[in-house]
Length: 377
Ligand code: UDP
Image (cartoon, rainbow, N blue to C red; front, side):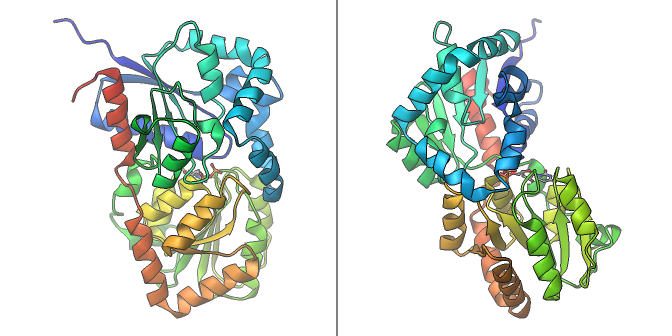
């Protein structure tokens, strides 16, 4: 009997931060779980591998720029308009055309999934003569930039109703927008087999609440200042700090004279376990980390955000009362003191956090991909 050929799905992401890669991996995992053997997948960092310099250095540029979150807001807002996006793409296109066309030649696919705002318009231009089906999976939560939305997309998947409104504002028809959620690794959905044993194996005290301090994939924002403030105030917690790819941050943290129990880590592939074993999440307002925190039922303290891009995430968390906005290290200390002294406050925020979770998002997006490719279960 002839075997049905596998459908080829090409994901376009870039390592500008950790969120686009994490979302891509979550969707690939969900395709394997829901439709074993039905797809072959490729994930391409299109900026790094196919764009000329300086654009190919976008991951490094993002990591540097995001150290000054306030510098992010102006360019973000100046570009945030449908016509402006089209103009910028038109001007930049001659420069990136060859790379984009090579990408499409080298990665033939039955469906392209864009997981990055800069992929959409350039993709549409590159496919003018030979259009392929493509969908966009928006990995920003609320303040979703105009770059995400191109009317030629066959479907745009968004994480919230607010992001859907932005899509409509930028001319996407309601029928081409689907609110599903942000795709997150399946492991976040699995309860920890033995939380106490995991804590013990990592040298964490069994009884002292753990605040998990994270700065996205690149250890961004004033992580060091926050950690020092918590240490100096001797907040009765233990601190677990994930530095991501920021090696100098890790070294600086390790050099601190700790007065409270502290555990310092570099980039981890065990974020589901870290969150499952923690009691409080202290993070910059990255959408991936926030949504993972929701699934893990963690109350959230947001200590930094990228102006423009992540402002909506802060409002979302604060307005729902899943957490607090604490842009000064002193405010992080106050929030932690409150949640340690009043476990009921912490539990209330944790309950709301969990209620905002969309644990099935990755699997639902896998179903959308299957539908677009004509694959049945
Ligand atoms: N992350 C990880 N290991 C680390 C640090 C971060 O897997 O050591 C993941 C984190 O779980 C999340 C992503 O990187 O999925 C960060 O995404 P987010 O949208 O929060 O921020 P970004 O880094 O994209 O600005």
